[in-house]
Length: 287
Image (cartoon, rainbow, N blue to C red; front, side, top):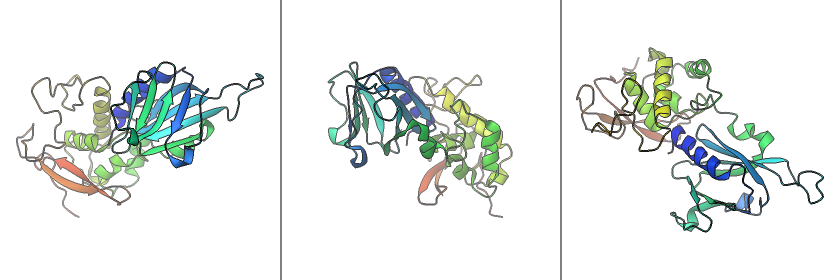
């Protein structure tokens, strides 16, 4: 599943392609919005909110110039989930994904923008955005970032495993499975350890934020950083990650073979893989 850094980069790409542009046409390939046509609307901005994308539009003026035709502002809200992606093409360009996976097609004079396999796609009044993203905690990459509030939300449930708390977007927005595994490793904390057993929650969150910020530029993601916070993993011949998907490979700190486990999500509806070093991150002993 794309994480906060991927969504941030996607928003920047869409912002560059669409901001200030008037739509020639729109094609929503989901039943609820199949009849909605936004031709003539102007995209004002595209912003990320954790793992969510908000594409804000302004209505065209009425033919008589008396005001906007319809709701003054709308927001296209999308979530990539596991396989979603937004791609930008030149007008009429050949898509790199199968057409049957397209969920939204937006055309301007300068570009075709296509959303493929989007997990969530809906259109709401911009004044009602809180209904779709208001539940999210502080965004690690957003202007609303508030470390104290994120720490407070996580600490409010001391018995919850820290790996579950970090993935709960109601606590803080933007961390996915990769960054929770990597941040837990850097703090020497097993993902299954309860929040109450984490010696420094703020330091763990700070590591996650630092890793996200280090991967906002081009190139492949890596979490192996130097002391100045620069990415060095693949450029130095090291693996891209400390532990993620490195089961049975040696720990980069102590050489102990890494392990994989599973941990339920906050809702308990599914389990996600976790990766850890049994030496650097001892398995918690049930109390």
